[in-house]
Picture 1 (cartoon, rainbow over the protein chains, first blue to last red):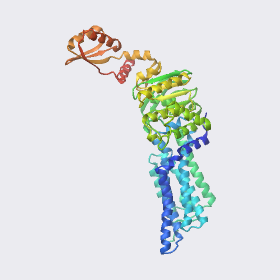
Picture 2: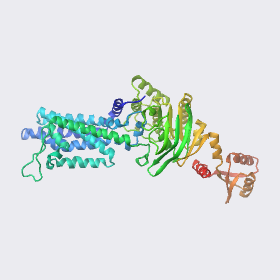
Picture 3: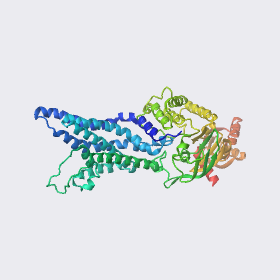
Picture 4: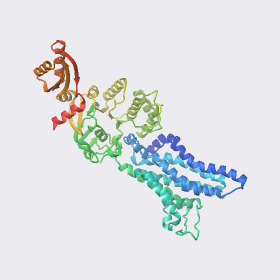
Length: 259
Length: 307
């Protein structure tokens, strides 16, 4: 009676699904939705005072959702995946089952991904209420959902490999990513931000001629950026699976594991 | 069924289990793993259940290495020590997930969960979240998850810890019934009397070494060779000491103020004679205080005896 990959994924995802209704899940929900809700309320007030400002949607998308909320959500959600079971020493209860071990990280991460992506999609589409064109908002929502897939997988890999994975992840998501506008064209492709902007068809900022170190911004075709984010996420999940597969996980603490 | 050939387990620089060899034949029955804390019981269990690969040697369960081997793991049930559960789960929902991970679906899954809860006496309380369960209830759920897929080999690490006497007896009955039904059971404990109630076959571990392997009477005989220290207070400690020397069982004798400390080689034969003498009025004994009857002292004696 051997359980194969897909039934394992389904079993773990179904089993852990109710966990999203705990504190971590509601924090993710609030992070995704509150910026749009609060900006919407601000818009209602601003419209009465100064009239409609269509740039707010763009500012909320790039200035808040993409550069702040998305990384924070990945940083919060990733430790709730397989890392949590490693730390709480509950993973052995699953590892003694006849399951393919490599599927476990993505199976647990999927729960958090679906939950976070759901609220990011709501938030992205909610930008319409802030003045975004429906077509633009749809692509912005798509960019958020795909970027969350890639960033969550990347963070899950970091927290699985490094004990201070959250710190390294924060450095990448808040340090490296913000270098986008001073990176040469080739390196721009190695940022999440580049692909988010390529998919959404909007930019978070323009490069002015007087900006020292600023580089010419490039764009990738939408389908290329979609593929890059999907494949990068899949690669990170695969590496998580490989890492767990080759790591002996015993009943005691990390210091008491074999070999 | 189980074969270890010089299998060892290292935790970094620490040796959890020295090269150990033994075999357990096919078929049902209960084998006790006996040893004090830190003896290597959990290390051995982790090797047998496939959680960790051996650092050296070979472990074979059902003819194959168990580590990350789904074919073998499908036939093993493990009840680990400790009170760790993922947060935010209800007992029955967690069992359903565990059942699915063992390949159970639909009606078979429902039946397995119901049977597991009923066998462990949790059928009316399985719906509770782990946080609302007592330690004993969580222990039962841990046992239920190991029984879901009806394993041929059931491994339990200190299963009686945290159980009240009634639950302890219930678990013993359940294990005996499973063993009679053909399940091979391995139970670890640091209490000989617990294991002795369950099985006649014992593996004795101490400081990562397999010290002895045999029946309960054989192990008891080994344990009886450990001199036990008794502090006896009597009206006349000298008279008591003289009587004790005459019995020929003494390894050492120390007189203290108003009492004598006797190191007795075989307390199981010495104590009835002492009782007889007291009842007959030959020894006006006031108190009897066993000083080092703990298992750890016995194991230390055996280690010295075996090296």
